[in-house]
Image (cartoon, rainbow, N blue to C red):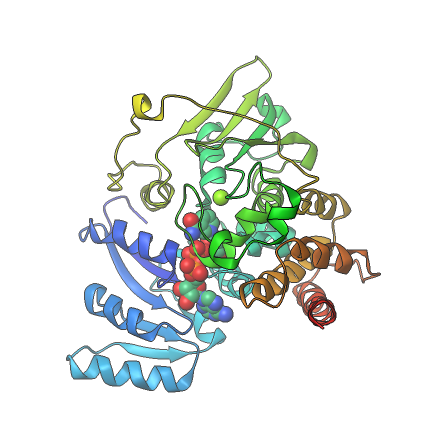
Length: 398
Ligand code: NAD
Ligand code: MG
């Protein structure tokens, strides 16, 4: 695609936190970006409003009855937009030849197949959905290199690292003089709390992040530090790093989004206000830079930057994720699936906060089929871990 051509974009998960921020950036550049498809799970009213504002060619919902509702609502305002239904439709709009760029912003394992479809068909893939890489890192990165897709990380830490690395960093970090990746973490809303108090927290408290406004699942992951664990695995795949080359640094102000330490002693950091429109705009415009609607960081207002080591005793999920990456094979997919079930149960008030890590640890301690070379094996491991986690949640709840 030439620099001057309009980028045609599919936004997977357009009604979520990342999806909305993406549309906010896109709306600032009508001559540069055209929305080709928007997708949502159940939020049909929000999707209708977005269709009205962005006039895509295709909209996707999960439920046929919701799709009929949307089709009627669109027709009543004179909009001719094709409405498609279900998971196959998500893959269809991710690999459609009319699309240049795919924002992969569906939450959880549900985002894997469409993100993979975008990677396989050589798109510019703006990857927000970290679970896809956690589950199938080898397959995903292989699909990217085979198809010639351009993979741009949107997770703020990985976007920061990407910005701090030399342009050509493939083929191992060591050969580019990189000593370590420093993955920053806010520490979540319960940093410094006592174990007894943490055990009693509610979903509302867990979803109230001190610095970032995000979807509910990732907010809980941030509170347990599983988010940082998933991000550690994500960084290993994106940057061809080992878990030992990555240090997690708790930085409560969330102003440094991550850093790269080089052999000569240099540490390069990316800073900015905690607003996802910055990495989203970076991904949309790369290698150019555009105004994302984000204020320049006011360092006098920030005043100080603090750093501390993560408390892995209080927040065992980070350790569990590191172990899963060391183990390899199906272990990260199993960790992810067990976590998704446990977080859902916590949000439904069927499980205590501290039991999220217990459920994940218990599922990971069960004997399982370690092979994960094919998509079928990964999906089977995911399914198996979900069943085991559901059984454990049920046992804990009774
Ligand atoms: P969210 O819950 O706000 O939005 C999720 C979107 O996915 C919605 O549009 C929803 O309709 C759709 N969706 C949910 N389940 C689906 C299913 N089964 N099938 C199809 N669509 C489905 O989530 P979010 O905070 O925007 O996060 C999205 C992804 O980006 C996650 O993987 C998250 O880890 C990652 N991420 C988010 C942030 C952030 O600041 N929010 C930062 C970094 C990474
Ligand atoms: Mg992040």
